[in-house]
Image 1 (cartoon, one colour):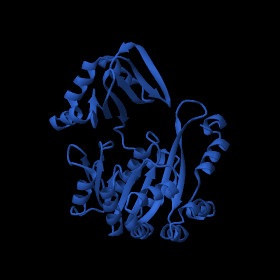
Image 2 (cartoon, helix red, strand yellow):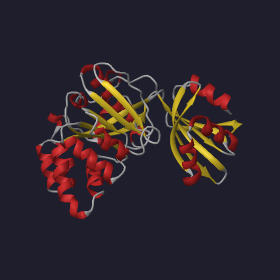
Image 3 (tube, helix red, strand yellow):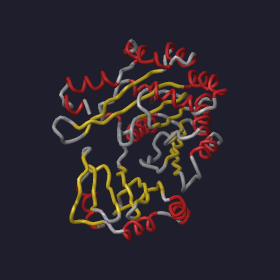
Image 4 (cartoon, one colour):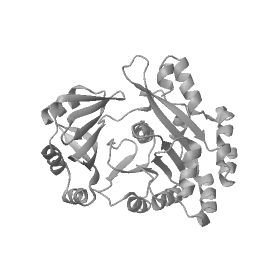
Length: 336
């Protein structure tokens, strides 16, 4: 199984994920489609070997106790983000390819508003969307541009670390949850004592992490975070709703002051079927948006976005429409 896995990983860069399930065939996702390699079965021992080779004692114990584990693995020099889990047939894993080459903003057709982030020195920027929508890649490209053009201390906290930046004009420190730090919240708390300019929080999962991210953004740091939400209103409501009702008015005020931008991404198959292209919804936190957040009139934000094109705002529907009109994606794919 490993020989075929290594062969595919090395020779087919269009594969985004490998699916390894005990008692089933090796499978992978390519340009959004699941493909099975029916003559290559996956055995339980294959998963055990993969874990013991790549994970430390603490991680293997965690998997034994909880039946789930997020980690990273290396296969023939190639890095993958891994989620190990148990099924009725035994252990299983999904491996997501982690590109070793740092992406540059210029290689993607990114909205102009994203270039404004590079010059921001404080505030909260959120990148949202479903799993596999390219959030990590977009953030890596922005961090790379900051690293290349500014003198800053950049600290990333991820689960796991995906893109490894080397110092350029900035200095960059990477911490991986479960290996270099216990959790996002403890790493973020420590980061505030590590003289940061830019902090990247791989995922804002809980109240403590979100609260610390807001505090960091409010006290003069540029903070990037990701959430598995769709659209700016859902994202803002998710953050507010994490907190007890008696704290929500305070969080609304804090969020209105610190939030700078919410970016929502979706990936679509290109019209020629050879790759994927991103659609981006952009909400810039201008004065009208700030007022709506303070007053908790979040449902009115889409109306402000429609009239906020001068500030770089665009709805997901309009972004998708532009991709169809330019011929980059087909009408059929746009509706999926």
